[in-house]
Amino acid sequence: MSAPPDHAKDAPPSQFHLLGERRFRPFFLTQFLGAFNDNLFKNALVVLLTFQAASWTTIAPALLANLAAGIFILPFFLFSASAGQLADKYDKARLTRLVKVLEIGIMVVALAGFLIHSLAVLFGALFLLGCHSTLFGPVKYALLPQHLHEDELVGGNALVEAGTFVAILLGTLCGGLLAGAPHGDLWIAGGGILVAFAGYLTSRGVPPAPAPAPDLRVNPNPFTETWRNIGFARENRPVFLAILGISWFWLYGALFLAQFPAYAKGVLGGGEGTVTLLLATFTVGIGLGSLLCEKLSGGHVEIGLVPFGSIGLTLFGLDIALASPGTLPAGAPLAIGEVLVQPGMLRVLLALTMLGVFGGFFIVPLYAMMQSRSAPGHRARVIAANNILNALFMVVGALVAGALLSTGLSMPMLFGVAAIMNAAVAFYIYRLVPEFLLRFIVWLLVHTVYRLRTEGLAHIPSEGPAVIVCNHVSFVDALVIAAASRRPIRFVMDHRIFRWPVLSFVFRHSQAIPIAPAKEDPAMMEAAFAEVSAALAAGELIGLFPEGKITADGELCPFRPGIARILETNPVPVIPMALRGLWGSMFSRKDGPALSRPLRRGLFNRIELVVGPALPPETVSLPGLQVQVAGLRGDWK
Image (cartoon, rainbow, N blue to C red; front, side, top):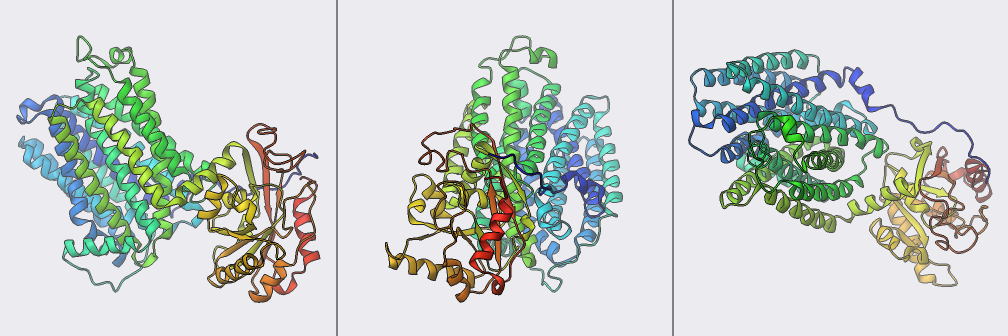
């Protein structure tokens, strides 16, 4: 086999270039500072109440932590519907600045609570901080699609999620340090005021984000509007199930986060520093997973990462439960150095890191999918519905966790139960929407057996009907092309390949169209052409292998006239493309039937997909089209 030619490849700029652009940087800094402030106050308060509970209340520290989590989340459930309406009706940049002014006032209330030593006032400030985040939520996620291009959406979401969790980490570190310092309560409130003011200054640089529905009449009833927003979300089934997946993630993650103070004290035998260590480990993992998403997804919304993320969330959640010590170490509370040398502690930290990494794989594609597939006119209200359900799940999770702990269930056992439930929820969602598993199989193929590089993907139209034609080298050609395309493609394929074991699941759920030769099954052939015509009329992409069979020698076979018949009925653009490097892989027919020598070239084989410019239908001829595809393939089979 000749060496692959050197061509320029599709290489979208790194997601980090967005940090240098005004359309993203001020917004990123604003949301970063907001997340930092939320966690500086919330976690410092929880640490104070966990380790100094006797001076504030008689309520058990473990229940106080869950109560604080529930109070912060409650406004999301109550006011998200109203926040979604405001974000659709008014300019989001202006709303961002108003929310930052509100944050300054809330931190003044917190200062008052510390000065008069009132737990009720502090919980009131925590509730108001939840209101602040509720108002900003729909603005935050609906603004991204207005300022970013489609191929920047995953990278932008990854930066936002990573930045949010880095802010959580830094806020946690600062909150923990301030909580243990002399007059720490005053330092917490004073620092919160300064950070809120800095957030207001950065918000002034956010570019205008015009309202998509300026004539919207705001419904003052939060309960009827909540139901209406959920109705908007349910109009698109995959979007709604993505929201359910996001909500479950926040229940799962919040359950772990809320237990960390009591887990550090009652299971690991540590102090405030151990709480900070656990939170830092988890948030670093989330940040790493979020940033890796952009690389693993190839710059577009890749929901195939979601099942991968759910597998890791289950396995590493169980591992934390199994690795946790069964008895409290002697001499507690221990310093961080003493905690780290306890048996199993490094395993706990590694599992916690990986739990965060796989959480990033799970959550970033779901957010990008929700944004990209929601109708622009009510996108903010769909995001508000997401926040409502997130809040409902998290409040229920906090209540259930508190109830289970009050019955005597240990924290490691609670983590194990949550991990098992995660597997059950994931199975339920993927059963309802096979698209997640379908994309996972496709993603796994091009990241294990192959290393796919692409050129000219921009020639595939972002909307409207077209026919894609490609050389046919192996049984997985359609999967490789589907992995590269940002749009779903309905492939026309030989009915025998369509029924291949395992792959039939993928082909069936991607709505591939089986076809047979006229001499073998004329009825199936006519039904296939009718289905192709209907799909093109509906604006879909059709994928065709005009050779009609998989090559037996690596060379192109003569193109059959099916493409001409399709264009007679539906004169649409034709996109030529070519696969390189698949000849000789285990799914090709080199040296015998496919799979006769599994992994004959090992794993991570380099392959390429090259896409040419669209051809007007009136210029397409079978000989000319074959020449086009052969030219794109070149000498590399």
